[in-house]
Amino acid sequence: AFNPDNEYHFKNRMKSCQRNWAEVFGEEANMFAVSPSNTYQKFGELGGVSAIQAKLNAEEIEIA
Image (cartoon, rainbow, N blue to C red; front, side, top):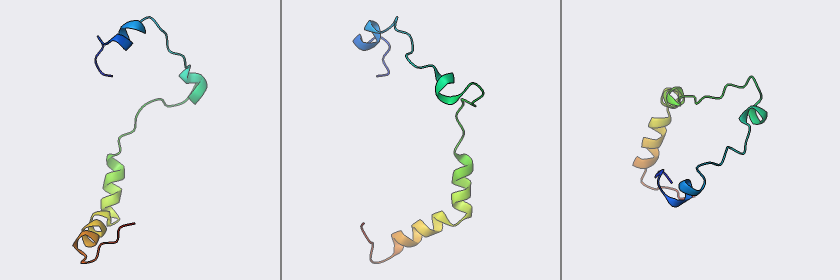
């Protein structure tokens, strides 16, 4: 998939994109990635790491 010289990419090299992303997301949409670092920080601040450690240190681990 990541090799630009493989047969799939060679055969489809002249093919244009079939989607117009402005139509999908709107003309004024922010089409960029957002870093999840704030999410991880919030997870830690709300005690997520401590909760996982408590579950792992419990004698009986529930498997759902």
